[in-house]
Amino acid sequence: GMVNNAVFEAIGYENVSGFAFGMGIERLAMLTCQINDLRSFFETDLRVLESF
Image 1 (cartoon, one colour):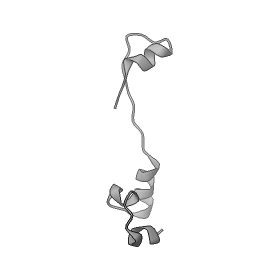
Image 2 (tube, rainbow, N blue to C red):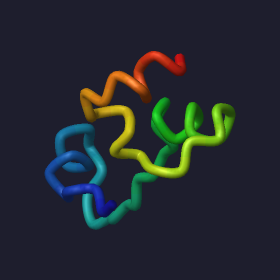
Image 3 (cartoon, rainbow, N blue to C red):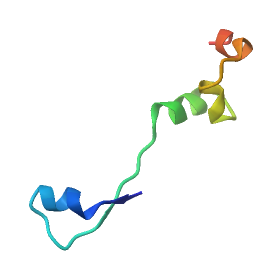
């Protein structure tokens, strides 16, 4: 997402804009474990949890 200008101003940069992005650990796990739905990590379905 877009970086707030206050972040840049706090470290001495003025009149700049920025864009931040990244890949979280959940996305890496989805790729390596072939998980199709990100919500699987946050649900309490024991079938999903027991598969790890």
